[in-house]
Length: 117
Image (cartoon, rainbow, N blue to C red; front, side):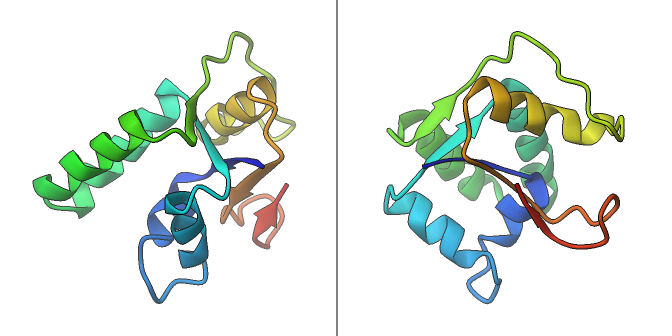
């Protein structure tokens, strides 16, 4: 199974008390592939710098760069979201170009609820 994780889901999942914690557990257990693009990686990095110590950053990079179940996708086309939300565009582009099974997001702006596409 291939997933794209919205930034807020990705970082919420690191908290053992989070509803999304099983996502990180299963990523480390290699139960699915995480699809990631350069744009997504840059957003993850921005959040990491604000929230976590430098030592964790190094471990995070090492995991992403060496894990067999993290797949880098280079979207060659931009698909237009009906909402036109630029912040979410990178996740849709990565999911479509990487043939993801799901996009998991906690973005309630559009639908008013959590979404798993």
